[in-house]
Amino acid sequence: MAFFNKVTKAAISPPVGKAAAAGTGYTGPYAPSSNNGGAAMVGVYYNYTEGEARNAAMSVPTVSRARDLIASVIGCMPLQMYNEMWNGDEMEKMPLAPRTWLRRIDPTVPNNFVLSWTFDDLFFYGRAFWYITSRTADGFPASYTRLPASMVQTLDQSGPVWFAPSKQIIFSGGELNPDDVVQFLSPIQGITSMSQQSVATALKLEAARFRNASSAIPAGILKQTGGEPLNAQELADLASAFNAARMTNQTAALNEYLSYTETSTSPDKMLLIDSAEFQAMEMARLCNVPPYLVGVSVGSYSYQSSKESRADLWTFGARAYADCIAGTLSQNNVLPNGTYVEFDVEGYLMGDYSERNEMAQPESYDEVQSQS
Image: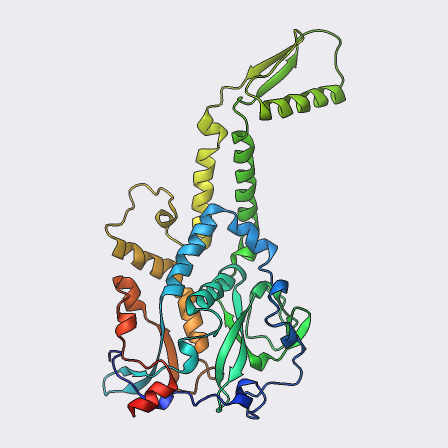
């Protein structure tokens, strides 16, 4: 296979003209449509939300850790372009100089941010969206901005499994022209719809642990030993008052007619440690990451080096999402036919990120022009 150490000028995007950048100077097959009312809400950031289901899942520590691990992989790898040529034995990758947007997907934020949150949408919702904010003179995209997947509705697909790019996209109440939107469809169903009961169980378990940890006095039974019998409501009020007192004080006071019998529950049982370990394992299964990477004990299974742990994270966790992003960006509505995008995986797996700065690939069209 060829190494990415030379430049092929054919894939460089032509300079962006002012009219083209505004989305009005091109009239070819990728020209923006007039039926694009939702575009007025693009970039109105105070209206952006990530969704309650996503935020609830992120409050589970294992889910948060798994998400952050995979996002760190997707966000750290640079994108590179290539085409393929038959060399007589196999298809050989030929490196191409990057189009303008490959180094700056969204001119306002780093690629690390855009790619990480694109993965976040794929991870939680099973799809992600980029809106094309400008085009080059040949009609292909020149820059993008990410649209939160939780704010996008598709009238022709209700989900949670997505079958193809939508033709009826609604963003923040307004319709978007699907030709102006790049749609990423994950091969894995989003976890907010895939296992809602598991996430809800984990949240209830955390609530129970918090409740048990809120008092230094062990759980027990409050019993009336004398005096006038109390009715059900009076007993409930008494128990409620006792609970309120023991939540804020180390010492509880009872009269001669009441006794409190502690349970024999140990602190580790009160904090439901075994249940928490099991639920963390379930969340690791849900997130498709090796349990040991999120701090779950798995007995005899271990890794010998950080290199092997990176390989496990890439193979079992990140690769499906990385291939989804690269494959979508290689389609003909993004790049000319026969050109492709891929992540530089070798740099990540080897733990050497210096290659990123040593790659002999131009940063802009102007730099290529100066070399020719």
